[in-house]
Image (cartoon, rainbow, N blue to C red):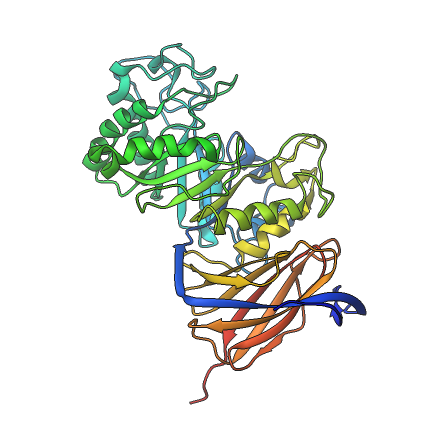
Length: 457
């Protein structure tokens, strides 16, 4: 039961000064017998030329730092999913000439994405998601790859073949694309690459794409449908699941967070579901931790926590990892000349993505303090990760009880992010009898990586 108005000595900076603070106490119970979703990972995109921003830094320490920040599982965020755009504009598409039988042409560059994919894979990234925003214009009702329009019914097979050929080009380059998306934000018309696809049309198309993909011999699986927001996803999942042929073709459901955030469960028929793109790009670059804005690190900690625990997401992706516009927050990191400037939301992701690795399983986590939001995960290497976000303006001390997770004695290593700290390691805590006690400073995010004590031989 929570105890209010206790006084604790807490460590609140990397210099470890002792600060006495009024706080509260509670108990967190991590229950490994309550198994939720498997985590596929966390990720970003290098679409629309963002990949080239990094490549054009040249073979320099700045470029290496940028790549480390994105993909290193020890020094950076350890992102494990890369989402690539399948370009449909004339300058970049593999089908630049209108034809009933397109002559495919590939520049072996893919707007810098092939290079970035190889760089990501050198860090251990294995999940590559290729998504088309639109079919080429000559396959659509409006004759334009932009400005909405629909896929012509007599071009469904041509579009399926086009997507499969894109995957073949990557296979020829030695890269197996994990998932294929055939549309992006299918309810949204905009001046750049976009295509309208309603749930019935999505069902009809995947029944063409599925057989074409199977016949190719490629192992890539189909994703549907990168809806603009979580509120729109259920229309597509219901339609796909209601059709046996469509359901057997689709392996993954995907949604963005723009029109509504992922904060409730959607019936996916047991198939995994990702939040595959989201940012709050409006306004001048905002690197703040806790200013009340949608761009702040604290707000993104709430988004990720809600997505993992309430929407039961298997993966959570931001939009761009790195971008250069000083009037945009669409990137986690801003490239300013040769300066690599991370926002606090970048470190929010680090607190999750570096420590919760692909294949981890979310375990049950309960807490007696409403201002402390807690999630727990067990990695395939046996480590346990507990992430705690303190929404209160006072410190909260928590005694964490670990049940059925395979750790009775060991060490909990805390990593703190707040206004003064960036995933900063804190003094280790001893785990004894399956419990440890830690203190989460006010308006702060802490990740505990817990490892068992190895028995001596």
